[in-house]
Length: 249
Image 1 (tube, rainbow, N blue to C red):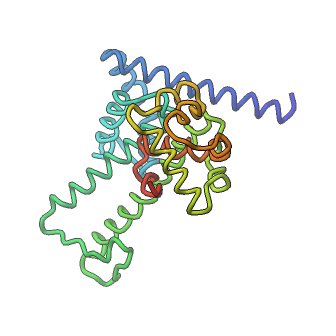
Image 2 (cartoon, one colour):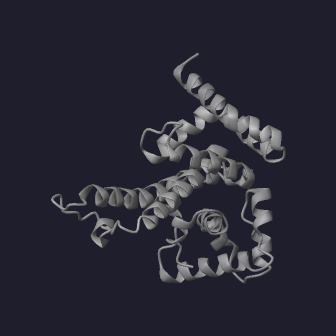
Image 3 (cartoon, helix red, strand yellow):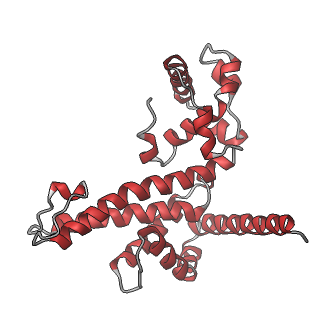
């Protein structure tokens, strides 16, 4: 077996393992006993994932561990296979819940005055509360960077189901104001109640005929901006709040 065949075999095994994990999560969501068993069996996995997401070592005695475990339980309840692989989704929920907890801890400490410059990363090293301000600064930067990073990874997984690569988007995005406006109108037509989301997810194709029944536009335009339109629609209709801020519609 040559290197290319070995690589293909390993990739197939990884996909099969991810599919297995996705199916286990869906089963756990429908049965309380299976959910408890799943969480017990995956404790070490959750511990490692939390450490990876938070960029720090996490032990079972840390508050972050308890919050992460609860976050994975929540992820099981809310998981939708159309959103991609379960553990990618669980990582986003862990990050979100721990970040919320960090913020609540900061608010609870009435004596800790967080300087505005800390959020911009501008801290004086000789300040008496330097360590607190440094932690706030790192947490703020972590929140922004990890949110986008996690959402990009999750969106990349989801786009692969549609035969789209995340980094193709720069090439297939509309450039002129006229075409940007046109794409915005197409997205609006797609999302007009009832939205065409079910048809998109079922066929994994842009529902051209349905869109044309709602909006007078050339089929050529729909074909040309297909990848861009699907990407925008997935961002706006799924759990990608950080990426959604970059959508001009």
